[in-house]
Length: 420
Length: 140
Image (cartoon, rainbow over all chains, first blue to last red):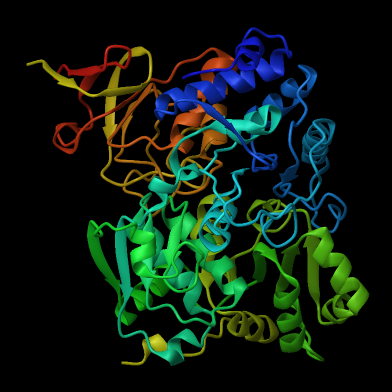
């Protein structure tokens, strides 16, 4: 790679050990992927914020010890826990100190304590075409696809390195030519009644991830009136079943006003289709429960938005969650303050809902909550739940989630794609 | 009979080990237990098997960007694969081994192979991975 004098001096240790290691890592990555030089990014979103393993804490604390501070505005992904309501989340005392140490390390690096996995809704929100370096697979897919900002799928640790230097290697999705669609996915025989059910979008995302893998896909046939939160669920699912960093929804997303535009004058390498039968199969795949027993209903993966809270409050209004079920919603502090001011929070609490901020529902302390089965409106959560928490989960739309929570047993209405 | 196959060294280093191959992609986060190195996604064909010390062969990575952190932890507790063979290395997969080298001074070489070379890999084979000179040798 071609490095500037300033970059070479950082590699010589002139800006301290943290910057030297961070830049060495970035240069290795750039060399590997054929980048000719480094480029500035305007902001970074750090994903490595969950205390999950000792190595992550060791890395963050060492970087602080070695003088690491962020060089550009840097937002933070969730902590593993609610940093303020950890007692209600029953976080064991022995791990609490680890979460708090990791929180302190990032604040000492001078990152902004957003603690959210939906930084595109509340955080340092990028504009179209902005060059950024984001971690968190759902946020990357959303920023690239829905906003049209430009980031590679930066991994944990690489995000910290990018924040400390404020630069990344110039390669991959930062460059226009690599953002063209490689495969075409056509939605076939998917009716407007099916599209009217919000539960379809995470399922479509899940299928797209399986089909696209790490390729850029263009999708035709999506309706024009998709809600932003449905696109959130779509991107999160796609980035959990595949390594999707960018996909184009023709007619919806900024780089795909037309199919020709996102193909950049090329022909797709492959043309695939998603049919109602495939949607049924995805739904079956995301149903791991064995009977109708359920004791956790969880939402906010990614973090719940104001619009999602308004809908939830409507569904739960004047009703009460069944005593055998725990109902969790995860969100960020901004949305939490809003629902508190609006009175939504007290209504939800009266209905038996627990609302947490900062944390990740996939990281709840499993020893404190020996659940038997979960229902969720997040395909991403359902996809990872067993491997992360050893818990069987089933994906369903939010109406089914609420109905299930009210009755204390799994209730699923017949989805429009199940009717032949 | 020995068989030498040329590939593209992604992260350098030389190591000899036993192949553990899968045709399915792997997400280290949500797919591999960071304490033991065992594949813990029940839907994965390697479910229950450990990647620790193996020359792990899978076509490409998938899923969450936290995979690199799990890889660094596997290195820290000495349960990482000895080397990785694949068809395509994406940045998330490469990050763990790159950071491990600079932070812990430990190498996990990676070589990318073409599809027909990748298909020659069988679980249990003894292989030498030379990612510095871009080849592997299948010993048996």
